[in-house]
Length: 534
Image (cartoon, rainbow, N blue to C red):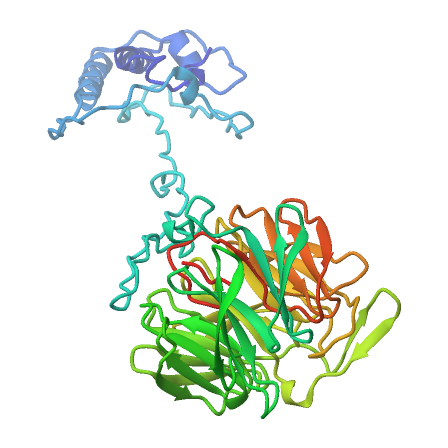
């Protein structure tokens, strides 16, 4: 085998062998060795004649060439290099082999003259393994983003602290019944707008157990701030028939006292508990009164808010947002300085007119001219304490409002004539009532339903239609969270809805039931309506 055919790998051909073969080849060439000449000839090898004996001058020239070759093969001194901290182990021989399929060039052996000065012998070629391409250092697998740290909430003076800023409803779980409601009877209180009476249902049996004629247009049953009294609000029927507030003793389930006032559509309480806020819808005004004696304190007038009626409060108690039903707006009110901070007109995505099915026929209900920009009803703060959910009866869904910036940030379609909003007891879901008609006084057996929104996903996760059609309006969730009690406003019934299965039981009641409540409910205090518990 020709020398040039040997693999040029240092680990397979030691340096001493390379030097010896080079010197031997050079001497053979100079002395005319047949073997050496054969190795330097191109293939095929042609036999050469026997060489003549070398002269003394030729021998001296050969010795000089060998010495020169030895000098050139002496390794050059290397600069001292710092020792590596931890050198990688030498790669196995297999790593040094040529890549499979790589092109291989044919070895070419030059023809040397019979007698010539020995050229400089180059140092043996050591194959260089190319370093891998520079890449960024390996990064660890990305971790799931950590939940942002929830900052504590500083509340207004006198307001109870927010225990869990990530869930403002953390203190309204089934196990959070206050000692103030220890003696309250488990009852569902149903006020009627047209039959002017209060009906009482035993939630354990779904049976009506009491009826109290009160002679007024009853609107809502509202737990007091201290949870010791239930207040029935009554709106003004005419200039000759005033409204007022009627107290219920929850330990007996009976009305005990009536305080006459011009108009009381709804009732809320300041977050510090120092005032009851009477919603005087007919006059677009909020009257502040002592929460126990009902003595007048002050008023905030909001003439631009037509049909002011429902509200909820910021997590820190510094402001409230009220809905303006007949002007399609929201109004933000500073609860510390008693002033209006601004108005927000809701975007209205619905067309001019709606078509929906009832049990017997198709009904087209036109938009009210005043409500071309929406008709906000109930409003409720999300568990995160930042986003307000607003039921819009004309848009058939829930509008999302960022409380601080007071801007519309989203919309979730739900059903026909979205009306009431009630968080689940664990604060993960929102029960939404869809009244089935866009009319203020709609027909019975409308396309009513209950929608369920997941707060974290901000999307609809379930819909429970009312069997045979209906008109779910307002109510609240039982203390154990297993039942949603809702009035059927245009169908003269009350719905007992299983929150696990969506099964609905209808209970006949008086004429036009409205803002019912179930009592007791868990929580430390009530901000009003049918039970905004915190």
